[in-house]
Length: 309
Image 1 (cartoon, helix red, strand yellow):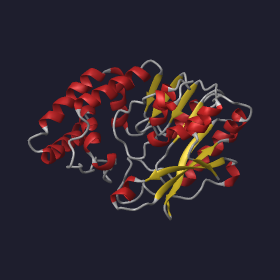
Image 2 (tube, one colour; image 1 turned 180 degrees about the horizontal axis):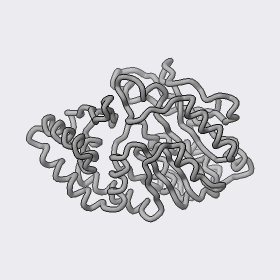
Image 3 (cartoon, rainbow, N blue to C red; image 1 turned 30 degrees about the vertical axis):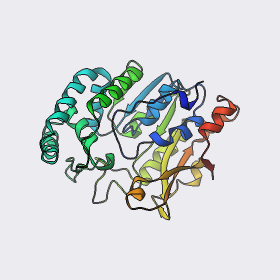
Image 4 (tube, rainbow, N blue to C red; image 1 turned 45 degrees about the horizontal axis):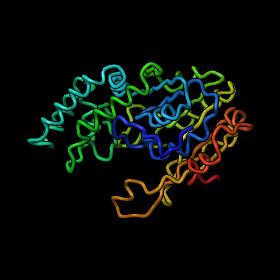
């Protein structure tokens, strides 16, 4: 297997909460025999892209309840050239008044849900942080210090993502409880749901809510079916916790990852670091117990900043 330094992972668009920066600490917990990876809350699909680039999976299912986002993924995989032509046109048209142009595109997107409009918005919004109103309208503002990813860079990323995932990827936009039912014995589910409390607060970061109790109920069913899964869920930045831990009766292995300084902390001049929780299911632990699917050198490199609870 190649080392991390030899692989460049393409990413299609900025997305707050993406696990791009800590994927190297998550991948070592993949079994050596994963057939299909399932991401029920895919977002920018950072783990899917990293696992595919390293050859750790054969097939993938990416899913998100955000239907316009999944339509964008479909265009990225199946029609990247046309998507890029449309994005490039938007990027150049904004030059005269980028602030006014952003609001114009945002209004058009809320009316039509065109995929190239969404790609442009994702490239321009503050910290890649998607926000929706209580009525479901995209309402995040632009970072007017920047024009968004340049077309040549965006084209390279989109084409490489399409090349990496096309032919092995199934797309869906259903509730996470439905897509995890597809997991078979040799599959792996990676879940990165919204932080607790973000779905029902005033800023409405997500189109649909997810309650703690509902999530736990589904995990109980997954345990009963011996489903292998990994969860990125709660965590803390400095002294601020982002949610309560998952219950002990699920028998999950709880790890902690030092994710470094958060973007918000950096903006505020703070040194607070984010510690993210990682949970491994009982079925996954059983699969990993006797495996040594990474060389010691790669294990050391990929787990350099991993701290076990």
